[in-house]
Image (tube, rainbow, N blue to C red; front, side, top):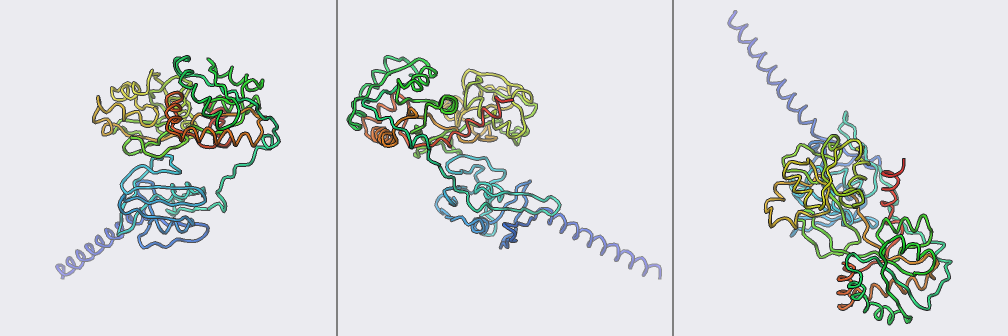
Length: 439
């Protein structure tokens, strides 16, 4: 009888252990599953969403279609692109990098395949298209609210539309990056090329200082100038004497390889780089760390990395220790030598260092990219007639597309071409002034 009771007790114990283990497994499994709601509609998936280390991954086609984006899968490149209202998003299987309108972004978790479904990060996808995303830790639920119109419009400048100045001759001025006389000589043929297209004489001169150029434009002594973004914004906002016509173009950068692409873009980016084995996983983690950067006027080596930090709650003056280097490559070397824990550099300075450091891409990791940093401008005096603004835009674009003109533009200004531009593209520069330099 005692033996029978013992057997029954042991059986009950084993059943209870088995039940507890399986319930625990189910609960553990549920901890990594998540639900998705987009505009009050619960999405149903063939493969359930998964919470991978804080990044909720979902089957791509379902979420793209729920966001009303047109999605294309490129089998050869193992890449997906989605387009909605002028916004293009690109992701690749296994890559930690994505692109929003050519701007590189570091993902929290790389896309992967699950039961023939490509899994992508739902927050990144939704926010890229302008949606608002919230996360409930308790319910493991992602809630997405889309904006009905995410199209940016570029309002016409009312002052420009009413401007009346018609030039009888065009005065253009720039600040040379090196020997002024040499570059002025190289730029001389542009006078004839532009003059032939515009039908009026063109005179190109040089100045030693951007403030002098801006003053000359405000005083109506110069009609067109080549201005960096910060000088353009100052002249446009404070002196009301300058409007942007064009932006210079440069070749884009492949985030995975660091090499130039064949696509011309009107921006560049900076990036934070850490050692591959660094515990730093986010911009927020930079608090209390030692950062290698450039002088305080460097857009890619200080200003825009500082803006990214500020927007993530880290003050570049109070929350980190900065070490200034003379050269972006030297900041990377400081990182490799253990002098700093992170380097703020332009994308992707590491490519030029591969000869001396062939394992550099293996030994380091990109932590984050900044937002787009606008390329230089070709700006015009604010009272220039609208018809002549268009003529000047077309003339510069035509010259840059001509083989001889393209060489001159590259040799003198290091530009690869030009594209029409709008003042709204320089809001990031105003954001720098507002967040970093205004108390």
